[in-house]
Amino acid sequence: MANELNEDVEPATSGGPGPAEEATGDAKSPIGGKRPVIKKRRSRKVRHEDLAQPDEFVEVGGTIVDWLVDRRRVVGIVLGVTLLGLLVGGVQRKMDTSTQAEASASLFQARELLPSTSSTPLSGGLSFDLPDDLGDADRRTKVEAAVAGFEGVLKDFRGTPQADQARVLAAKALFGIGEYERALVFVEPAAKASGIAGDRAQDVRGFTLLALDRAPEAVKVFADLRDDTTGASRARATLNLGTAHEAAGDLEAARGVYTLFEEEFPDSDLLAEVQSRAGANASP
Image (cartoon, rainbow, N blue to C red; front, side, top):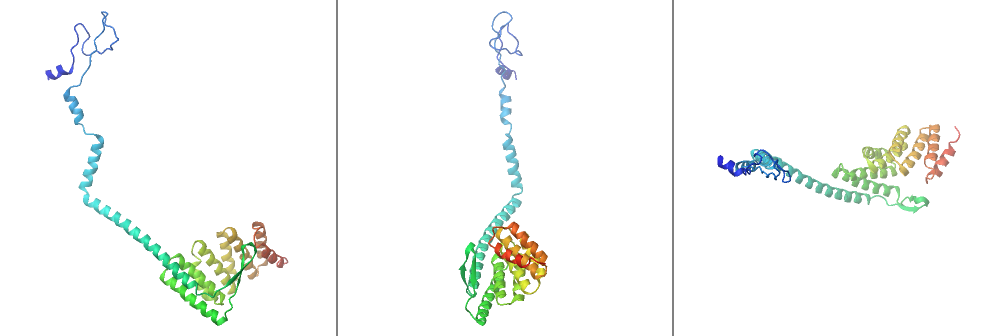
C-alpha cells in the first residue's frame, strides 16, 4: 500500500505547501518564489475499478437478451403468429383482388344481355335514351336472361360492390318491363349500400314506389337522398322529391320544394322542368 501511495503522489519540494494544497503555476509563494504544482494522481487500482464497472447500455442490453433467452419459447410463438398473420393478410388481399376482377367480368357479361338502347345527345351534357325496336316478348326474354346473369353475380360474389351494382341493374331492367314488385325486391338491399351504388339504388327504389302507388314512402326516400347527396345528385333528388309530393297529393309541399330548387340550383339544367312543374301547380 505504501508503494502504491508513493507512485500516486509526487513529493513536494522542501519548504513548499503540503500535498493537500493546489496552486496554479502563476501563484507566488510566501517567500517570493513560485509555488510548485502538485498533481493528484489516481492509483492504478482505482482506475482498474472504474474500468471494471459495466456500461449502462451493456447492462440493459444484457438484461433484455437474458429475458428473451429465458422466454425464447414464448417469443418464438409470438413471432410465428405475427409472420403467419402477415402471410395470411397478403394472401387475402391477393384473393380479394382476384375476386373483384372475376365479379366485374361476370357483371359485364350479364349487362351485355340487356336490350340495347341508343342515345341522342342533348345540350348541357344530357342525353335522351331511345327504346330498342324489340317487341314486348323479345324485350322481356332479354331482360329475364340478363336478370338471371345478375342473380349469378349475387350468388357467386355476395358482399362485393359488383353485387350491389347487379341489384340496381336488375331492378332497372325489371322496372322497364313493368315488373315493379320484383324490381323492389332486388333494389331494397342495395339501397343500404354506401356511395354511388347506394344512391342509385335509392333513386330506383323511389321511382318503383311511385309506380306501385306508394307515394308517401317515395317522399321519404327522395328526402333522405336529397339530404345525403350534393351537387347534381342533390338537384335531381330535389326535383324527384317535388314529384313525389305531387303524386302524394300534397301540392303545397311540392311548390315549396320547387321554390327551394330555384333558390339552390339557379344554373341547373333541370331548372326549366322545375319551373314548368311549379307553374302547373301555381294555384292551390
